[in-house]
Every structure is written in C-alpha cells, then in structure tokens.
Length: 383
Image: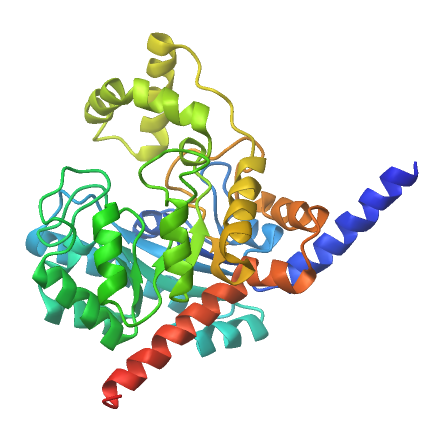
C-alpha cells in the first residue's frame, strides 16, 4: 500500500510539472490534413494529433512539418510548399484564441504565457528551395524556422541517409545554404542527412544545429538515428537532439524486421500510393504480416530509454522531443499525443529534477531558437 501511495504522489507531481510546462514537439506531420476538410479543432479517432487531444496531453507547442517527398522537385515543390505554409497561416487566423503563429523564441514564450498553442513552421527537405537562396529567403519571410537539409533522397547539393552518396556530403552550394540559414536565423536541421552531410554542416554552421526528429543509433541501428559521436558533436556546439518516437526507429528488433521486409514494403507503398496514408498504411502492414509474420511489438518506454541515453551522453541541456506524430507508426502506449504525460512521469521516476524535465519538454528548444536568432543578429551587424 505504501508503494502505491508513493506512486500516486509521483503521478500527481508529474502531472503538475507536465501541465505547467512548455511542451514543445519539433516535428509533427499533421499539415497536409489542414489542406482538406479535416478540422484541427475537432477530436478525431484516427491520427495522432488535433487541438482537443493536444490539450488533454499538455502539448502546447509544435513545429508543423512542411513536407513532401524528395522526388517532388522544381517549381512544383515550391508551389506545394507555399500551399502547405498557407494552410498553417490560415489555421492560426481561424483559431486566434487557440493558436499563435510564432517566429521567434519570444513569440513562443508569449504564446505559452497567454495559454495558446505556439505554432511554428519546419521545412522537411531542402529540395523545396529549388536550388535557390532567394526562395529560401522567401520561406524565412513566411515564418519557416528550420530547414531539414534533405529528406529520404539526396538533393542536388546534400546527401541523405536514405540514398547513395552523390555530393560527398554537402556541395559548395550546400555549404552556402547552411551559411544563409545562419544569416536568416533559421535552424539547420540535420535529421535525415547522411553522416558526411552532418559533419560538413557542423563545420560550416556558425549557429548550433537541431536534429528535429532523430534518436540514438547505439540503441537502434537505423541510419536516420545519430551515433554517440554525432550527438556529442551536436551538443558541443550548443545543438539539441529531439528524440523521435517512431517504433521502427527506437527498437532494434523492429528495425531488423523492417530491414527484412523493406523491398516488399516499397512495392506495396507504390501499389497504394494513390490512397491517403491513413488507409494505405494498415493495408501495407496487413500484407507484410501475411508474408513475414507479425512485427515485434515496441513499448513507448523505448522513447524514455533514448532520452535517458542522450542525457547521460551530453547532459540535459541538449535533448528534446520530436515525435513524428502523424508521420508513421507509434509504439504501444504512445498511440497519440494524449499519452505524453507518461514521459514526464517516467523521467520523474528515474530521478530527473523538475527543472531538467522542463528543459527536455520544451525549454531546450526555445533556448536553441534564441541562440540561432542571436547569431543571425551578430552576422547582420558584421560581428
């Protein structure tokens, strides 16, 4: 009975911490839904996020991912990106009492103070700049606050972790992109890039960088995850790794299963490419189970394992949350954003201090955003 009472006290303390904190998620793939009839302000039984569920889960800040496959390039990529951005702007206009579109760290703090969702824009893939620094500057004006240098395929100027090397990391133009991001106060995001691209970007960037949705490769070998050496180097420059929740990224057994089924999955994705992701993915998984047997189950506690590993590696100031909600399959127990308070409780049970939990939940992300803004100011003033 005493043990149960102790657990009750921890749960109550965790709830108090969680729901009074700025809880930021740096990568959520809900944006395409905003372009249709789907309503962000209504509670849904599918997907991972909407405003009612955010409130229930204490999630009060997010980067709306501006995403399209890296195979969509040229003027079409720019046009489609602008439409995605416009959908987020319209959402903020339609729900001004609930959502504040933020461009700066100060904006995020103000939104939280006012009890509003802090909404920011993160662009997932350098292919959307169409090899143009003026286009990049236009995105900055529209509020984009990080650029993921690549998605799952190479750009013309940067190699991806999901493709064969072409530029040997960053090309000369790719290095110019990083420098321009620094000047614009846009965070350089190294999730999805090849290891060589990461090291090149780290060398070129004056500002600290973000891994908006990456986990730890020493726990699960997915190439989208970061090695311990990379995490240390990112942190040494003031950067933050935002831990990804996707089940196949955080669990080694499931990652091995996905490797075994990769070719069949690719064929099935092509077969269902004209269907919405929410209806296509269950069909893909059903067919894979028929061919290869059930995939290993993954517990949400793996997320906490990755957080804890990164903290032990580089300290609490360099770790945050980047779920990939609506971007893939979540682990058991993290079915949607209503489950987020579990992370706070788990960290508290592990002995994390309240101030350190608040850093992981969101303050590290705001600090990084402010650091990037400060360095952009220095560059403009010629320092």
